[in-house]
Length: 142
Image (cartoon, rainbow, N blue to C red; front, side, top):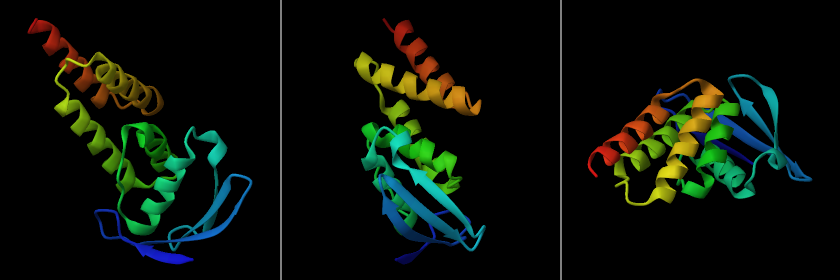
């Protein structure tokens, strides 16, 4: 199976071939950029649904994120250097942070945890700073 995807902003197309799927392992061949074989071990990600979303995004250039899939899809996009998808995940998180009203502490905890993981794994503190600022502003208002 082979599909052209032009999901990134620069218009560079990536052809991705799904070669085989055995024992929860999906092998992908990405061309023309590297001609290297990537093995995607679904067992290292907590959600096989996220792996399906990731592979579908590679084929279609589109992604519909949900909070339960965000972390694994973001990590997959980072691990496999799919820049357009990583940016889309980050915009999704930014949207969640912007839309939170501060009343639901479980949502605030979720956002803080996701932002902390990104900061710990990438040294990108942008999201952690945004969540902290939201929390600080909510506390000032009370």
